[in-house]
Length: 209
Image (cartoon, rainbow, N blue to C red; front, side, top):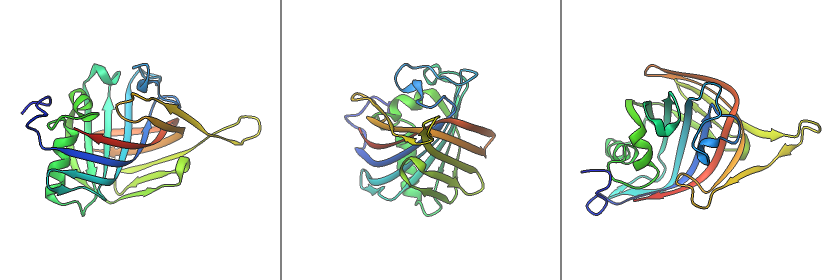
């Protein structure tokens, strides 16, 4: 089955909240101009998806949390990335199998049919994932792997919080991203990422094929 064979692919749909931490400057330009603003032109990220509603065929995916740790050496569309996926220990083998097909683009549907062409999966592991959802001040902790923390942009004079959104009506990952400043430090399957005061975006997602 190819990633474009959506007529015969198992139908899937995921809704939930995404937590995206990357090494771009806050307001990650990859989402709208295609190229990262990191110091070396790479794109390195920790992305957590908390699924509130979801199904793939007959398999219920509601309540699943998955984290992708991804290291692209250049812009995402240039490819060459390596990815490790992490799910909670109570995720069933059946759920893991369906999520694996979704996240590797085998069943079609954005964003993963596009993203999956840009990286090689080098690991799949189970670990306790703790998401502390406090809006723009949210954090994600992955037992034995690392942690990501987000906070609001601040007024440099008064230190008041800035609420900043990137609105993309035709965005293929999200349509309204709440933007802040993040830090993350993770290590797994040969990927080591450690960045401070870089981009972080919280968003609702609604994906399907």
